[in-house]
Amino acid sequence: MQEEKVQTEQTKVKEGASVGAPIYRVTYHLRILEKKEETHTHHNNIMDRLSRMLAAAQGMGGGGGMQQDGNVVDNSETVYISSLALLKMLRHGRAGVPMEVMGLMLGEFVDDYTVRVVDVFAMPQSGTGVSVEAVDPVFQTKMMDMLRQTGRPETVVGWYHSHPGFGCWLSSVDINTQQSFEQLTPRAVAVVIDPIQSVKGKVVIDAFRLINPQTLMLGQEPRQTTSNVGHLNKPSIQALIHGLNRHYYSIAVGYLKGRGGQGHGTSTAGESSNGQVGGEEAMLMNLHKSVWTEALTMPDFKAEGDRTLEKLNKLVSLAEGYEKRVKEETELSKDQLRTRYVGKVDPKKHIETLGQDLLEDNIVSVSRQMIDKEASVPSACRIEAVDDEADGMAVDQTA
Image 1 (tube, rainbow, N blue to C red):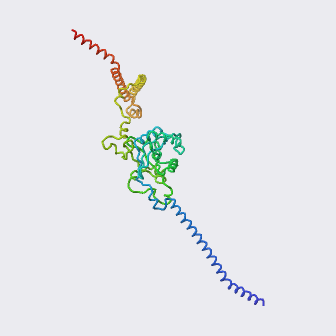
Image 2 (image 1 turned 120 degrees about the horizontal axis):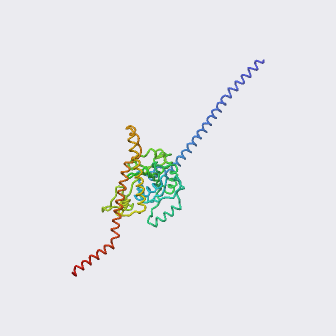
């Protein structure tokens, strides 16, 4: 009896399991479908959100392609610097060595391809670096007002600063300064000049402008290319290390030598159409020009005497050194003489040079004194000589 009860219970369980299995499977599949739908909905929401963000970024980057292409900067844009501005920048940078100095550039944006710099002025600054705090707005406003009164109506087109001895590039502080200028003027230019590496005929100078980081994120070029201008200058390794073509790009630099820096000519334009030399060309030709009257200028007698006495004392010390050297040469061997005076002053050559300078200075000084005496003192003597000659002629006539 018990066995029959167990068998009946097992059959009931089997029948219940056989009936409940399809219900369990249906429930399981329904749950899987619900999870798939939730995942699909979540993915759709993410894709919609990404598409909205991309559309917003493209709209912020310049209005969707066509509008941005019309306003992008060209790589043939050139900064034309007048000779007056270049001289001022070099003088200011050379006077501030070894410190960095800065100033503002005045000019105008002629068109999309030309920035003209006609004048600069220095900014008061203390410290070793160039930062945003170095730009004094009160001084800038007063200086601009005074320049307008003198006939300089131009506006600020950028700023310049010096890198004495370490090339042309922008540091992180310079980038922050340039950002503050570009917030006021989007086409502002940062000019870097090196007064130490600059020599006669070769000025180490470069102009920069920042790259918009949104264009890099979208994979767009910061400038459009319409010519080979702007690609002819090979950048230095230092500039590439410090972020050139990543955070900022270089702009071509030209020079103006027209009439007062107002012409469109480059460094080859030196004369006007009628053959006359332009204003800035004449200024450069007269810079440090020697005048024939300088040779007749009488120096201070006391200063000239002290200078001559100093040279004579130096000549005596050189003579003593030469005498000592001659005595040593008689006692040393040939091998010792080869390395004995390497890197030392040769008193014989210095005696010859110093003696020649003393003779020339004294001869010129005596000649100046004689010419000055003839030009100033004899006026009274000449009058007496003329009177004596007139008296002699009168005596001859009476005789």
